[in-house]
Length: 271
Ligand code: ACO
Image 1 (cartoon, rainbow, N blue to C red):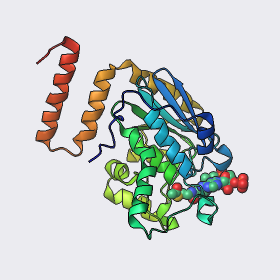
Image 2 (cartoon, rainbow, N blue to C red; image 1 turned 60 degrees about the vertical axis):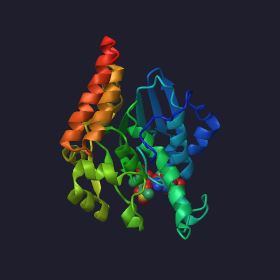
Image 3 (cartoon, protein in one colour; image 1 turned 135 degrees about the vertical axis):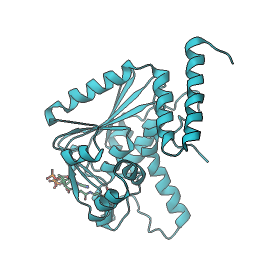
Image 4 (cartoon, rainbow, N blue to C red; image 1 turned 180 degrees about the vertical axis):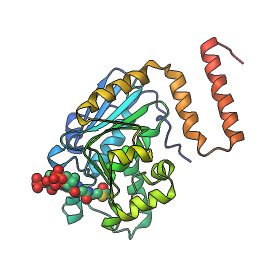
């Protein structure tokens, strides 16, 4: 089975999407040394997302230079993202599947999910900087990140069931992992909105700050993340994500394995 969390196995990353591709996807990308900032960049549409957006996110993930250690996801304008572009439902967007060809629809959704799954890769730490609304696919994008730094005006909503759909952009697993099955059911099946203070109580936000302090809080967090040894960060992220799936015995073994790798790298042991 493909490990969706692994860095692509190529010697050199494919070229980053160009300006035209990014613009069509409603995205902007800035890479500054070890930090990549991905901006959802259709503020006039409240950063509503299209199929091109999700493909663009996947292309960014595939093309990240190897020295990028932290990826920040943010939204331009008044909010993080209003979720899927609702104009696609009216039939003028690129064709929605009616589900009649299950295998083709499965492949199609899997391709879109690739826009999200790379955010859990151990070689990078991903931070969602959320202000204003994060709805549906936007909420799921925040959930796909390792951490969420949230402005006090943030509002999360898993809107899909209210529209007759299920959340299918990888959000159900992190949501249940973070808030538990009962709360996840309550949030999804009522499609209610969760404000920043409740998001913090539920564990959906690691940090809540006044809206005008969001950029500074993200910059502080990024600086702290970069201050930690890069190899240890990668190994520790891998270890922590494995913890939920592993038995105690498996996790103890994983800790030993990762530590051996660290010791070899730090002290030159050959084994
Ligand atoms: N798709 C397409 N266009 C959108 C979307 C969207 N999801 N959200 C907002 N827009 C457009 C509006 O139509 C409006 O366009 P207009 O200027 O041509 O009239 C513009 O963005 C601004 O939207 P407003 O509603 O005026 O902005 P406001 O800040 O008052 O509200 C909010 C923002 C709460 C996000 C509201 O726009 C909204 O509820 N949007 C729909 C959210 C939604 O149901 N998303 C689908 C989730 S399910 C999923 O993602 C799978």
